[in-house]
Amino acid sequence: MTPITQFSQLDLTKTYSYADYLTWKFDEFVELIKGKVMRPMDGPSRRHQVISTNLLRQLLPVFTGNSCQVYHAPFDVRLTTSGANGDQQIQTVVQPDICIICDPAKLDDRGCLGAPDWIIEIVSPGNTARDTKTKFDLYEESSVREYWIVYPGQNTVTAYVLENERYQLTGEYIEPGQMPVATLPGLNLEWAEVFAGS
Image 1 (tube, rainbow, N blue to C red):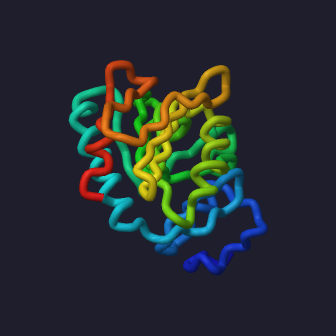
Image 2 (image 1 turned 120 degrees about the vertical axis):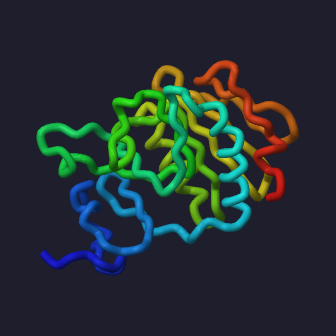
């Protein structure tokens, strides 16, 4: 088998597994969704990075010494459980901008195996449909308990929580104020701090 050293060597019509993904030796970060390779996204913009850093600044102090852990991209989240065939059976690997995992049993040296408790995606111009439709549906189906989508161009955050296996909108934040985290009662993020300097 010829090693895959460039993204262009992949057959985008083929179905791949996490076992395949682990053998790829190219620089681009890609995601697998139900066995299909998602084209690499452009590198994050300065604004994307500022917002990601601002979110981490608010989250890290809260979770230091806590059973919940905060991770940011690139960090592999495998949204299926392995069975008898292990990595060969896993067909979905995503790299959320930020995720919070409260079950340490889901963590291993490769990342997270199973659904994080909370995922935050920051929309970039080229990935709006991926975050608002493809990943929205995937995270809902995979039982990610809470999903936030940050829109840098509009300084907006939309928050969804899983109820009866479907996402329900819990808030759309467009101005300064607190943004409560439904799955972690008592935790609120500050809208102004998320978008500061962006």
